[in-house]
Image 1 (cartoon, rainbow, N blue to C red):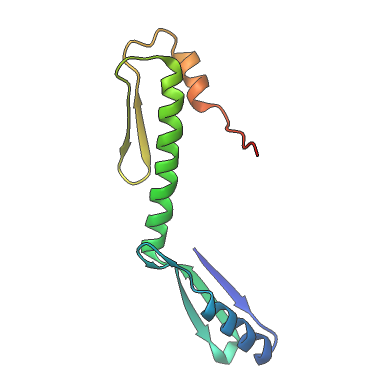
Image 2: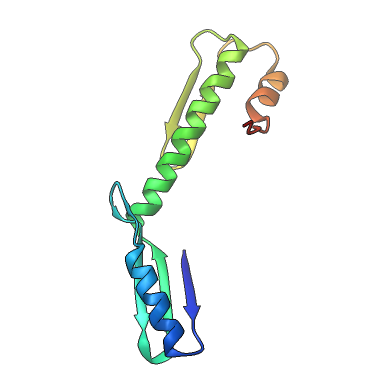
Length: 115
């Protein structure tokens, strides 16, 4: 994913360039994004690196695995399987479930954030 910022004048471009340069956030696998500047057009492009996309995806899938495992435990199924498959899939196997519709409802329910 790339975001492009075009500025009306070089003053805005220079100011944004210095801010973006200072705020380059480092993740587990290095820089989270690459910055490309085109001084002639007052254009700045910011794109996530492949490593940062992988890091974000891994974190999201990990969070989903935890949530799904907690929900499967609510079903009381013996020896359920909840595991990652590939880079962005999760497999859920519930041997011996008598009511698949109820299981799907519990697994697929929307989470609520409470503070």
